[in-house]
Amino acid sequence: MINFYKVALLLSLLLPNGAAAEEVANLTIIDQRQDAQHPICCWSGIETLRDGSLVIVSDQGILFTAEISLDALTLTVTGSSELQASGGDASRRERTDAEGIAVSQDGRAFISIERRHRIDEFSGSEPINSWPAPNFINLEENGGFEALAVDPAGVIWAIAETPSNQAFPLLSLEHGSWQSRGTLLQSDGFLPVGAAFDRSGNLYILERRLSLLGFSARLRRVNAPVALGFETTTIWESDAGAGDNFEGITVVESHGQNTKFLLVSDNNAMPFFQTRALLLTSNLPISSGLIKLSR
Image 1 (cartoon, rainbow, N blue to C red):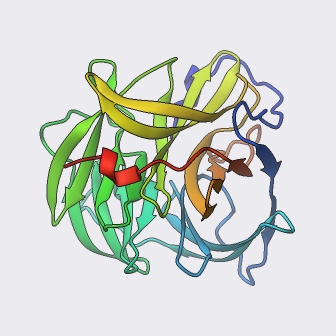
Image 2 (cartoon, rainbow, N blue to C red):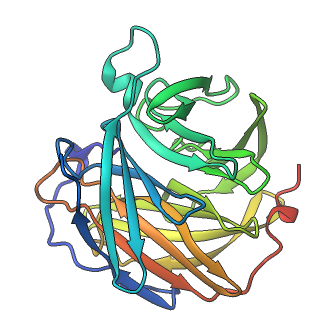
């Protein structure tokens, strides 16, 4: 989420112009639910399942299921359910401020929760495990693990929106144990809000920037570690003020050098922002992925 009192101007929002992606396309969102008691809004995380279907989480604690058609350029919402809250006596806001979602190859679903910063494992909409943020990092209340992903080996990776010394710690969670894997240097005022792996083990980071001109979005691939952090390649960046509040990212197709990414936006239930789905296609050469994220 973002604090909208910092926004000084309300601007008309146009389709972002791809800077490095080969193709950028808007998807039409279709609501096919019989009972639409949960409004389509506030999407903060998205993941592609093994069968090609999608799960989307909102920061209001709602889990959506959806299908994508790459030919028709549509995203069809097929169902929704309310996440059961964990976190003891905390307010529901603290217990269900969901920001990122990741699903492992064996079907284990993980959701990062903000304010009471942690990662919860879910079975359907029921929480079954919970891991609080490690005590070796300090997070702002509204600056938790926005970016969450599971690599092909089943290791959870998390990046907080709160920087430390102008860098973002890259953390992993395996068998309930947190490890620091290095840092991503902050640049141009962008903050990490989403993450995804492709099937080759390449890690991609979705970032957001807010200025008086409005929102900007940027997609980067993490490459080799360097002295102060990780080298990255920028795949796509929108113009300032030309895009909505994109927070969720997933890889929907990865064949050879052709990789397709699906981005979704969080409108924060504000009438002047939109819930959007954006399809990016990149033809960057494949890198060796996890080999460069050594343990």
